[in-house]
Image 1 (cartoon, helix red, strand yellow):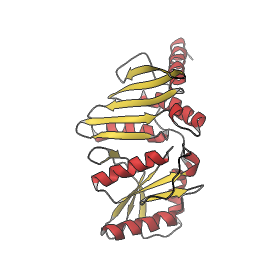
Image 2 (cartoon, one colour):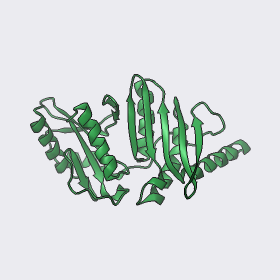
Image 3 (cartoon, one colour):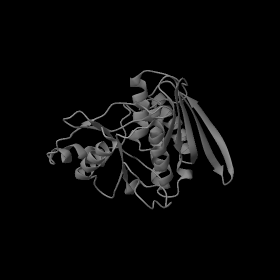
Length: 254
């Protein structure tokens, strides 16, 4: 490595160490084209970060990312994800960031950054995050079901009025109905409830949220599995997804 490359790695590592102790990160996304939004949202999803989205495509978005200090379970694993997300973020354009950092118990500091800065330079060649085994395995498993529904990767950013939905897949029925599927990254019961409220506010029914118990970040109770939601422990069952899609279109009269 050249001297400049070593310095870049050192500077990014120092910033990553701060994010490992973050309470939350806020991102403000400038209005931009669909590809720019998809790249930014894709980076967040690739590293499976808990996020809340506000705004719309015309005016831009504000995204709140929960930090590892704010979740009760799996905080070490989640902290690593937050840290390795930073070099991916540096590859994106049109954003500014403020991270709240816990310096000591009861004391916080703030770390500000924008996409226009030049002090930090990413060593990543692309935004791609860790492989999600659930997302990787589902298409092949779907093919074996011989379902009348097709399962296709989705590249859409769906406007929910005051929020946005970034599905991983779209299920298409021969009759023309569509149901969108998102496999959640890290999640908490409160985050799941907030996400469902966003869909209810937008009066959107043709969606499924799949939540992996392995990535649950809180011990808060989830007494009942909400509508349009699948909880799974090891593998996302294609049959369960198909049944949920059929139920959604039947109840919604799609």
